[in-house]
Length: 324
Figure 1 (tube, rainbow, N blue to C red):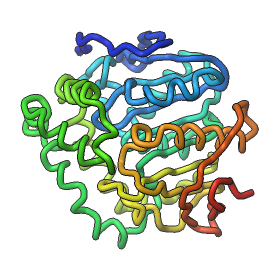
Figure 2: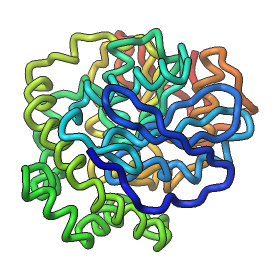
Figure 3: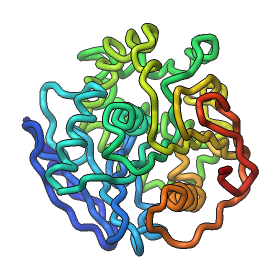
Figure 4: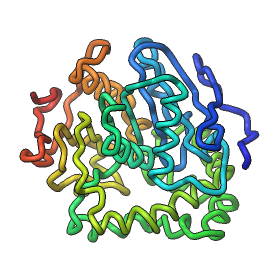
């Protein structure tokens, strides 16, 4: 078991700590105080992915930016990178932090873990904001025409080969980051360098997570294992209009959910927290306020919203407000 010895990026107000859960030391960066919000990063990032949201939210929220097992400055272990295992780590972390109930935010892989958690243990989560991730009720007829969008996973998911690609071909990771956003200018050069280096250091964990998805989650998806589980946690899903990985078409379907809203963000790609941090922060405030949580004033900008199934409790909204 190893942890990264790379220097931590600097971000004002960060309090770094390591918490041992389920045989691994997880790194978290905490900011601010108030309503507890747990943020789970996606590929190929770590806690620093949320740097643009921190100044927008930390004055009245306690932000807990988690490095999932094996990523960033959390300990890398041989196993434990399946979706349920990563979720178990998050639950154990909440216990260690004495947090009974939190708001959850996740981006791509982190949002996948978030959906699973909210279905399994809804009582632990006040609300859930999912960024650039399909919900568990995507229709097979929408998935098949979009499988080509996952071409890059063939370079990452296979044992040995995937680790070699991530460790020794940093230009590949940099290319994925650039192509994932609608405007490459959303990235600063130093941020691309940081996340590329992070992917190299966490190559084992990333490859193991992708492979676990292939051997566990894809078969479960075709069996409909998680489609049968109801989602009762109030949930917003934000997806970019020009997301090259998770296009809006994958958010169609009839979710088995009480309160699920899909919002399409015009002109944006696959990293909404990088491309539209203000919109993401305001969506989070709106979501928390709608559940009776403490939050500051909201001013939700206009966007395109998509109905995801009236029978399931999800709904279509008018631009700039949450339907009730």
